[in-house]
Image (tube, rainbow, N blue to C red; front, side, top):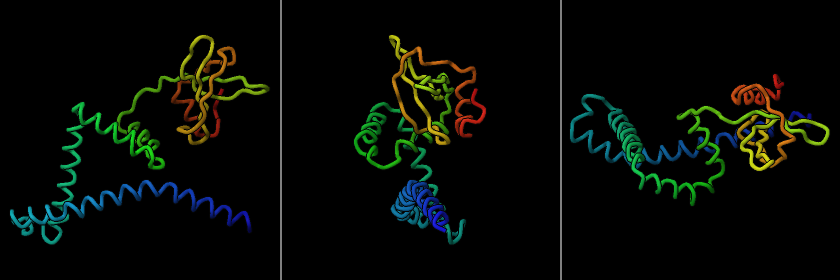
Length: 187
C-alpha cells in the first residue's frame, strides 16, 4: 500500500513539474488577450464586424490581433539590435525562471532542426564502460556528455583522457534513440 501512495505522489509531482511551464504560457497568453480585448472591441464596433462574426466577434478579432502581434515581433527579431535586447533579457531575467532554458532549447530544436554532429562514444571508467557523446577533443583530453536515460537532454559533462574513448559506429540520432530506450540497441 505504501508503494501505491509513493507511486501516486511521484506521478502527481511529475505532472506538476510538467504543467507549470504550460500554465505560465497559458496565463501569459490569457493576460495578453485580456489586455488586447479593448483594441478588439474598438475594431469590432468601428468596422461593424459584429454583424459578420456574431457574438464572438471581439474574441476572434482579439485573437487575430495577438497572432499579428506575434508575427510582427517575429519579423522584428531579424534586426540585430532587437536580437541583442532579447538576448540581454534572456541572460539577465529569464534564466531565473525554472526550466526556461530547457524548454527554449527544446522549442528551438523543433522549430529549427539541425543535424547532430556529436560523435557517440564509449568511455572506459574503472571496471566498466559508459555511453557518451564526444563534444570536443583537445591536447590528449576530450570533453564528453553523458546523457541521462530516458531524458537525453539532461546529463553530465566530464573531461576524460582520449585513451578512454572508443568511437561507436552509430550516428548521434540513433544513439540518442537508444539512450531514450534505456540503452537498448547500444553496441
